[in-house]
Image 1 (cartoon, rainbow, N blue to C red):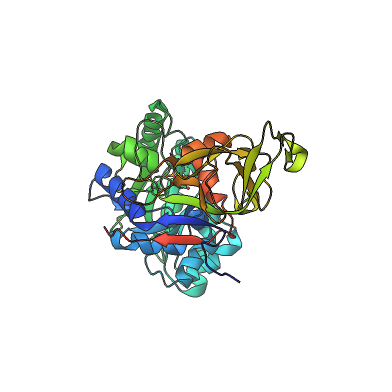
Image 2 (image 1 turned 60 degrees about the vertical axis):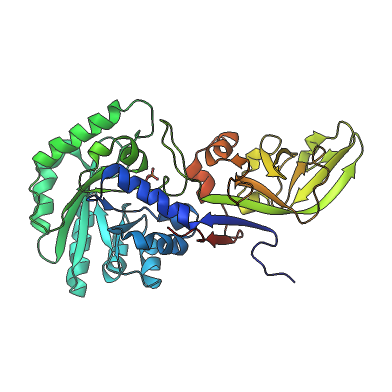
Length: 382
Ligand SMILES: *Cc1c(COP(=O)(O)O)cnc(C)c1O
């Protein structure tokens, strides 16, 4: 029995490239801007522990998560740095969050009251950042009503609960037209002017996700919250990131089939002439999008080979008629660069795979299943 992580299918993560992508954001916004790397959803599927280890030498200001459980998981790993929870959470999770020394983002007074109560119950300090909704609509106090909620927030903070920041989130920072970004900044600033902001040391004003940090760094203010760019997601507008993630799997069977042979559920592929098919040990149960069947390609021996038939839960078949020398056990690359040596080989980018699957790079990355071992490379240093 083989227990090697690379025996069947795996995700390869380049920790050095991950760190270089963070430094790229830092260069864009300037060294004085505090970094809050977003590591929610298991660091966009890469694995949060490996990601935190890779980025820790860059001394970020805080880690950004989405849920209390994610924050507590980091504490369980011994992470002592600030952890900010960036989604509204259930009121009965405030106790656990306060005990775990998590910072909450607050979108309404009821949630703030729950934090105040939890802090009193445990006689603990708790920190909050206030979110302002300038058009995203899913969370945050309304920018138009700062006169009403501003004093309510101020009245509840300053004691055990410290108001440590205020932020908003752009809805279209990755679109070619940046006029909505400018409009959201204006709304944010109009709300800020009317807020009784506290005199807290290290108070942070922040607006930018990845796309905004790289394309509109003039809006960075005190801090930025990059996510996808760290993990190698490219964007519209010529912003270059380094690939971080590769998905690879081994050929488990090779078959020569006669004309007319059918393949896969629904028999959606039928051999035209004599064909050579390679069965590869990866499927939609590993997070390879099923939409790639009869649509996407993979890389083997420096060549692109078509994915034929429907993708099954555990197996995918590629047509190697044009690369007949491929052998059982060989590695097929479904995402990323084929050869990991200097110079590299052909590449399937996140954006290309997302296009085949009619989705975005974020969903591709977070869709990879726990069954795929994450194999970290940190060899190149830096
Ligand atoms: C996820 C998230 C980000 C990061 O967005 P990217 O587009 O991945 O850079 C930033 N801020 C908030 C509030 C988020 O939820």
